[in-house]
Image (cartoon, rainbow, N blue to C red; front, side, top):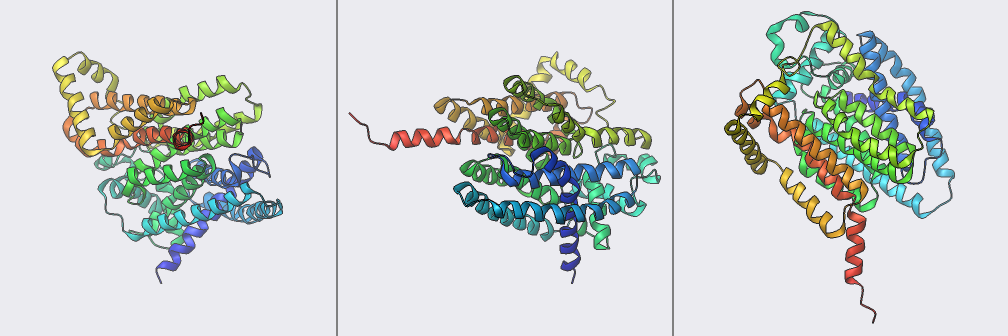
Length: 450
């Protein structure tokens, strides 16, 4: 049955990736997780770290053999480490938080299964998915790794954006290799670890109603991009997890939250070129959090290793001789020229605003964020989200103003996807206000005592 290889490949990827990252995750979080983030943070961090370690090995060796060999070590680490975590969890006395973790884990597992079924339910059909990430994955699959080959040197394939980071392409090649075939379904297994890591990270960082709100709004905002092979939805989720992790760390000091933020940014850098913009706009939030906590340790510098695969990719990309049109087209110079041309600037900004209003949820998310904030106040964590979202949207405007491509065409074909990130960031900021909303509603409902 064709389902059996897909189930086996999916289980293999999840276990081996979690195993690869588990020693690193447990070193940062400890065997007994901290009160706020719980055990979900350990598993989410293990998966994200495993994704980065696996990708780094593939980039460093340029072949799939090292990743396949490391997978066996990951299998052993994963089986032993998860058994240890389960035993530790079972040995804890029953408590309210223990029960919440149990039901939270059940809900997260159900969501992961549902999203996995959605991922495998349809073949690769969308243009960018087939022509960029999974096309690169097909090349890597048949080349046996990310090696110099006619594909990378042939300028006839430049339309496929060969400069895009290759985390998902390399992972899709490994999923297909384990399943034993490249087709329109097996490579999509690369999205399942992303789904599991993202859902568990949200479960770890967002409490109760906030988690439910983020899950529902993520599905509503990102929709098919979570299963059709586009990377924009996953980039938006990584940005939200990073901002939420920084906010939780600033509030509680739990390093598991900061580690999740670093890992999410590391994954984002390896998903799309926009990951660089995301890391840049999250930086002010991180600086503000560090200024509040003042308790970084030497061990925390290990989190910088999350950026190592991206640094390796820069070297691989230079060796392959590929570059993107935004890297050499003078985007800033073009944007400045448009900014000084008032009629053209007015046209472009109005066109962007009109398309965003008609085809995205950006303005609705912004309006909800501002309306609720003005009613209950803006917590520090919500301001971190709002600042990151505004800076990201501003960066996108600069890119669109300076694009060397036909402006209207590029807006129509990409704006609805790229604004998912600031939209979800605004909604993430709204989720941090939920405790204040509930408190305000309780005060309104309670009888006045004279």
